[in-house]
Length: 167
Image 1: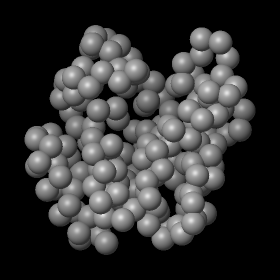
Image 2: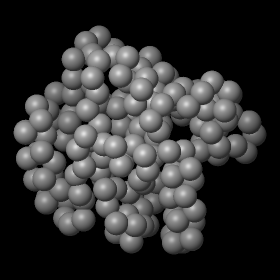
Image 3: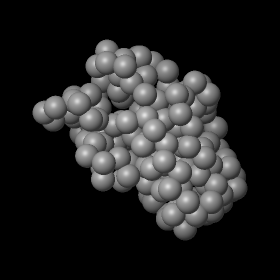
Image 4: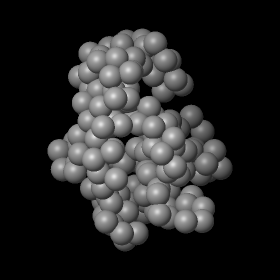
């Protein structure tokens, strides 16, 4: 979910030698070329899924892999069809990062990315959009869940401990 700490986990994975493919960036490249006037990135991604199927963002992300696929992480899986697409590469390990909504909303208000808001109602609406894509099923069926409900340092410690056990 937005603001949970996925980007921080991606940074930790990069430090461990992983290539990290941010799935929204794979979509953004195509969005910049052929989005409709005024279309939000989220709406564009939904339209792609309607046209090409639920796994399209994973397929676009797989195209981003350069060279070895030994240590690749995909940041931003939104549905089980995407997990299935990654299964074609091997046996993916799905790691979910979970944070309580109130804490995520505080983080998003501080970071203020282009798709963030200062209004809780907007952030909740965004959560519901994410859930409508199927992200709840991905989180529920994840192989590993890292809870990020404390400090950045504590999350890094938890993530490093868990990653050490699974590598």
